[in-house]
Length: 238
Image (tube, rainbow, N blue to C red; front, side, top):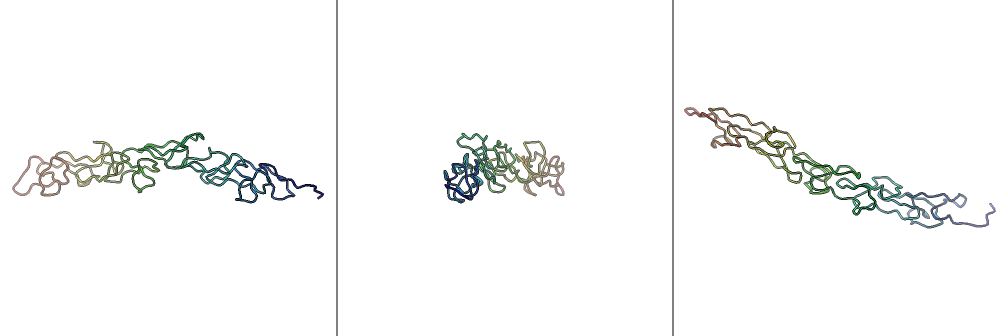
């Protein structure tokens, strides 16, 4: 009681009531008259934290949005640009002076999480996508998806192609059949066959012939069947 003057709270401070002291509003929040009405230099009645994806170095500066492809990931009240982290598919080192702040993961690389860490390499036999099953991308990938059983890809930016019977899916050549992540489709050699690209090439013994299908003639490679010679015929070699 007995007040002789009414003094506005100074820059960077606020008071919700004329009978409350003026409190300091820290960086990461802004001083306003009410919430959402804009920053004021004096006479503030509230101290509002900067929302997710924004920051402020001073309570008398507006909340600034994070640079493109970065976010504070739900954190409010951030005080500097360094709180902004690169989103999945983008990388940066947190240098507040970098322009752009975040760059897309380059060809054959990907990043699954929001961070300022480096992108990881996606090897042949897998494909780079934004999410799984959404199609191959050459940059900005968020996932590295292994080619399904019976398919292969020589490059992370090439589609997974079907490997037909008579050949086998491998990582490289002569390394053995794999169920996923294959980089090559190798035809079964002379005298061998495979009914499925995820089955090993089996030897077709003398007295039978290696063919693609049945009755289509002997092949030197890529056979899908081993057909016994019929009655009255023979073969010294498949």
